[in-house]
Image 1 (cartoon, rainbow, N blue to C red):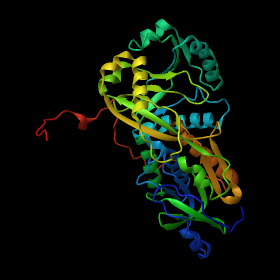
Image 2: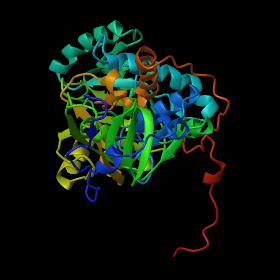
Image 3: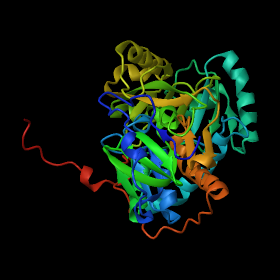
Image 4: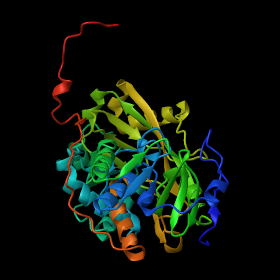
Amino acid sequence: MVEGAVFGPPFSFGAGSAKVETSSLEHAPQLPMNKVFDIAVIGGGVVGLAILRFLALAGQRAVLLERGPDILSGASKGNSALLHTGFDAPPGSLELSCMKEGRAEYLAIRERLNLPLLETSALVVAWSEEERAKLATIAAKAATNGIDDVHELSRAELAAAEPRLSPEALAALRVPGEHVIDPWSAPLAYGHQAIAHGAEIRRNCEVTGGEFRRGYWRLKAGGEEVAARIVVNAAGNFGDLVEAMARQPTFRILPRRGQFIVFDKPAHDLVGAIILPVPTARTKGVVLFRTIFGNLAIGPTAEDVEEREVAACDGETLDRLRVRAIAMVPALAGIGINAIYAGLRPASERSDYIIEALPKQNWITVAGIRSTGLTSALGIARHVGRLHDAHFGTLTPREPSSWTPVANLAEHLPRPYATGGSIICHC
C-alpha cells in the first residue's frame, strides 16, 4: 500500500448502505492534529469495547465507530455467555493466551464493576464408548494448557452430581473453572469506563471508505469524516470487508450461525453444571447451560451461512435442538420454551485468532474471534496494546479513576426491584 492512495472497498456492508465515495477525501485539506483521534476502533462488540477501554486507560484519544443503532448489535448479541478456562483450546494458540489473560482480568475487576459470576463448573459428558475414550485426551490437553484441576467422573459419580441427566450418560470430565457470566453487563461496563476516561462511542456510524494520507486515516463514517492516526479493525462479521480498506484481505470471514432455545424458569435447577459435549475439530458443540437470568438454555448450533447481519431462527433446527435437550435431560419434556434466539459468530478459515499489526498502514487487525470472544476480550485488548507498543509507540495504561457499577440483572443476586407486588390491572 502506498501512502496517499484512496481506499474504498468495493462492497456494501448491508442493505441501505451508502456507496463508497472517496473523491471528497482525496482532495481534502490537511486537518489540524487536535481534530485527529489517536485511534479509531471499528466495531462496537465486546472486543471493540474492551479495546476502547484499554486505549482510554492508556491516555489515548480514541473513538469507537459502530454501524448499528447501539453497541453489541452484531456477533456479541447472540452467544452462550460462558467464561472459559481455555482447557480445550489449541495449545500454544493466541486464542488460549487471550482467553487466560482476559479471564484473569475479568475476575480481578468484576466486583468493582458489579459484574455477575455464576460459578457452575462444567461437565464434558461422554454419551458413547467412543466419546468416553476421548476424555483422557481432553484431560491431557487441559493439563498442557495449564488447567490442572480437571478430573474424570465415573457413571455413578456423574449420576450423583447431576441426577436429572439422562442415564445414557456414561462418564464426564469436570472442569471446575468454567462459569456463566452476563454477556450484556460486561461490555456495557467496558464502554462506560472508556467514556469516563475520555473515549467516544459513535453509533449509526458505518465506515464506508477511507484514505490513508500524511500519516493518518480519514474515514467516511456515518456521513461524516473521522480522522485518526491508527485504525483498529474489530468489525466482527464484516472484518474482511473492512480490511479491504488497508490491504487485500489475507483471510475470509465465514459467518457461522448458532441457534439457541431458552426454557422457562422451572428448568433452571434441573442441572447445576454447564453440560458440554465432547468437542469436534469444527465446533465445541451444543451446550446445555444455566443463564445468569434464571433460565436454562441449549445451543448453539453450528451452521455455515452467507448472511453476515440477520441471524434468523428456523423451526426445523429448533425442533431438533429441543429433542437434543430432552435426550440430555428428560424432565425438559414437560417444560415450556421461554424464548429463542440466534447469533452469527465470525469464524474464519484459520484455526486461531487473527490479531496483527500493519505498521506501514497504521492499522491493527482483530478478526476471526469466535465463540470465546466474551472471555478473551480483555486479553485481546492487552495484546493489541502490545502490538501498539511494538510498532506505534509505548502505551502505559493507568489504574482506572472511575468504576461505575452496572445494574444487577442476575437472578442469583439480590434484586430488590424484582420483589412481588400487587396486580392492579390485567390489561
